[in-house]
Structure formats: structure tokens, C-alpha cells
Length: 419
Image (cartoon, rainbow, N blue to C red; front, side):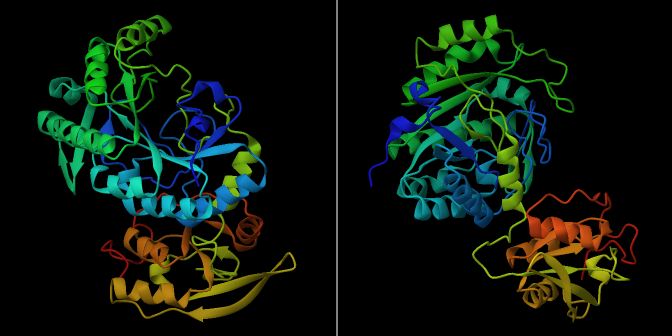
């Protein structure tokens, strides 16, 4: 089936009021720290990149898109833009794109990235018919770049200063060449930061044009509390217009950008509606792999009333089921013995293979990852079991408070991780 590229509202302003997009928040990690970015995962009141109300697994993302299509929303584009960087989370990003392409073959697919780690995946992106890629290129000057970013991570090593800037620019140049070599439409985003890169915008546009970029989007920096640029004032409309006049002599300019959230959905001019929030919460509370049969929920509890136990300390979990709208206890299930590292947590995942989630008062990062990889969603909370289970089975957000503790704090462990 031939894809209709004219239906992308970001690249074709003539259809921005007719066709919409959905951004799937499946990529929470990032591999650079921009001076203007503060990623928040649960804020519903801010509309800017890096913000989302939920983070989804690839299976949950497909579940969400299915619901959006069934609801009749005029979605023509599925994009991944964070809340971190898609290719700091390449497994989740690529699996999401594969699932969407298989289930919705006529949907346009796009990704937005800083360009640091996209190059190894461009060939498969082309095979999946990802038709549009955006790279955020704020400068082509390493000295300016060093002022834009706090650090850049190469594998697990953080780079800083000019070393980081030069490394990022090399990777971005490689990515831009590979994207155009595969015939993919390329948009360049440039965040205009007064006093940092505002005098360099025309140079970026001229370079992007020489590399075959198709569209340029100059975005005014949004001052965000807790970032390196929080005290820099947002560019005025006059500054943005002047920058677009200069850059426009090299590349067509996008002038209808909405600085979308990582979970944006609908027409470009639409905010985040309650209907959309309800659908994404429903998806986030579905099993990590919604096609699997996982009817139960496990709870780490000492007394059977509250979510009150760290999973590393639990010898057993209480398992519950839903039957005709009623939450009922199923059984108390014994967990594998303590010790054994990852093997123990793999065994716990197998023990909970019919559970969509486990509710705990605490857990270490390693067992969280192992359980999530096995299809079990880990929910860290305190509160009544009954209320939490009602939310899960209704597809609603659990509003019980999270425990702000690290592994080893306020538990019997020694801080060395859950063995």
C-alpha cells in the first residue's frame, strides 16, 4: 500500500486542521543533557517536549493506537519523540515501530531524535517505511555546542565540553548523510537560545540545505525551571521572525510547530484532551504485552490489606483476580528463595507469568528491569490494596503516593541491591 506523505500535518500545513498525529512516549531515557530540557513523566499542565503523563511499553503503545483509531480520531501519523531520545531506547523504539507498521500498514511513521545514536538503525527505519525523521541540530560549531549541552553519553561514559560537542556533531553529520542516502524526508529542528546560538541560525540552515534537508523548524527556547538556561528569557516573536527570514533563504521554514509533548495527540492546535488522557492511562495500566493472557495482579503485603512490603524481602505475594467487576483473592503464591541475583528475578518473573503487574512498597532497579522484560509491570506505592486493584482493572491511574526511597533505605536490606 502506498503511503500518502501529504497527510503529515507537521510537514504539510495545508492539512494541519484535517489530520492529526500521536506521539508514543516509549523512550524515557536520554543520552545527552540539553541546557533547556527537564524531562518530566507525569505532568499534565505543561505543553513542551520532554513531558508526558505516562511511559508506555511497545505493546501498550500499540494498544493505545488501536484505541485511538477505533475512536475515530483522524490520526495519520504515529511518531516517537521521547520523553527522552528514541535511540537512547532503541529496543523499545524499534519494536514499537515494527508493531505499528504491521498492524497499521497505511500509517505514516516518524521519529524525532538528537541524532547521537540513530545511524545504526536508519537502514531498518527505511525498511519499516519510516517516512520522516527530525534531527535537532542547534549548531554546527563545537564551541557553541559546548555551551548548549551539559554532557553527552557515549555508551556509559559521559563526555563534557568540547569533547562532547565534537562527538555529538560527528554523529549528527553521519546520521544526516545516512538519512538522505535512504531517501527519507528530513526536518531539522533548531532551538533558538538568545545569547547562545541566535547568531548562528543561518549557518545551520545553509549547512542543512547543503546536506539535502527538506524542512527547517526554528523553535523558541522555553525557559524551564531546573535547567541550565532557566534564567534566559524566551526569544521574542521578532527574534524568531528575523531568524526565519535568514534561514528561509536556504530552506523552507515550518511556522506552525506547537512544541508538542512526548504524548501529544490529535490535531496540532489541540491541547491534551481528557479523552486522550483517559486512553493513554488505560493503555499504561494494560499488561506490558496486552496480547498476553495475564488476568491477575500480585501484591507484596505483610498483612493482606496494604501494599506494605519490599519485594526483595517478600517470601510470598498475594494474588488477586477480577470477576464480573469484583476484586477477589485468588491465592498466596510462594516466591523463589532469596539470593541468586538475576536468576532469582527471572524465576520470580516466571512465577508471576499470569500477572499483569506486581504492587510493591519498594524494589531495586535491576529486579524492576528483569520483571518488566518478563512482562510484569512493577508499581511502587503505598496504600490500600483494594483501591489500587480497582484502578488497575478499570484502566485508571493509581494515585496512591510513591515511596521516595532507594534500595536499602527503610528496609531490612543492606543497600547492595535485591539478591
